[in-house]
Image (tube, rainbow, N blue to C red; front, side):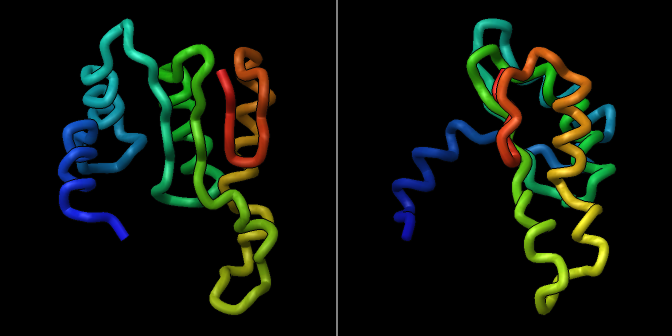
Length: 119
């Protein structure tokens, strides 16, 4: 359980940007917040379908610092397809499928573990 003091301390490192994560103006806002010498880790946790995750990875992968990561959340969806409260297309329409396509296209990422790409 986080205490208010823990949340307040972390809040200084977080900037809330509201909007569609793959909209050009949102990506531009994120890019504007990053200085050239900063080490960048990206976490993606919005729409969990293949097309959206692929678009997010394509948009944000160039921002990842060498030696850092981009993490697409909920890659387990393909493994729980068919379970109660899941959607039938989760077996093929999931973050892992988007990640796999990016791994094939972005040779700069040396490790493409489940949900994580390492620059």
